[in-house]
Image (tube, helix red, strand yellow):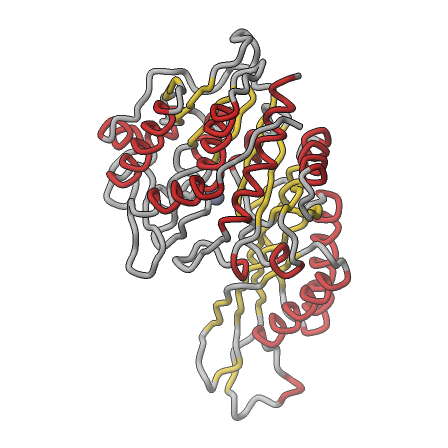
Length: 410
Ligand SMILES: [Zn+2]
């Protein structure tokens, strides 16, 4: 344990000043990636970091690295951060907390006069939200080596503006190569974006990993017929079959609790007429679980359940998988560090899986990685109403400071 204290008021004040950039009438923030507002937020962060004695570098995808020097400058850095961009009607904390918690750690270490052996890098990853360029975790993705820099720079928004042009326009097309250097460890603090911690009255979520997801499009074929003349016994009702399948996949989810979440979120019926027996129903399945093997087993069970219903109803069935995101498991040593720091600080904590994707998921492929969750009000996120308590944010930053200091000493 290092003897330094994060400043709760300063951390909260930084959030409130940052929240003015792109403030929405509903009390949230709308700050899309690589807009003028994103530039202003980056400029504010860079200014604060320079005041705190950090050296700032920007890479070619616009990721910003603010470095607090270590006593051994040849040592690989310990890194922390998140994102400053938001959803169009987003909140004041999603991503922003992870960046400002990193800055608060730097300030608190400065206050206490504590030097670390390894340098500390506080990072702002470019375009985490993906709202503008239909991308998502772009900066950390390129950093990890997922896709090429050229492809990312060529992506365009709805108005046809490219990532590369927008980076240059706002002054964040940096000269540094993207990634390719060793990182000793990466930790990201984030609001939970779910209701678990708040509902259990727990302050720190020790994040074990992020769940994987698979998406499917299910097409059920039946035969159209007159709603008044076709007897019930002779019908091949595609919507009825789809309804039974949706009920069956819901039961699969309940069989595997506590972890899986399975959603049939969209449905299209043909011809969608009140007095015609439906001839076709197409619906989506979104299935998520932290364990790849269980995710695969759930996949099999859902297919079998749908096939049985299709068979019984004489309904030809087609199931297409439309996406496959592997679960992420964070490094056990990083998970232990977060848990131990929370215990040592006397903070209530529990292990938890992230339901959402984060920059940390990309970083877990290039460095030992861990995450720290703090509660947010009612679990609401991607919403102007997103809220968090100053003391919970400070608790998360305090845990972050301890784990960064521990890894920066090793
Ligand atoms: Zn986020």
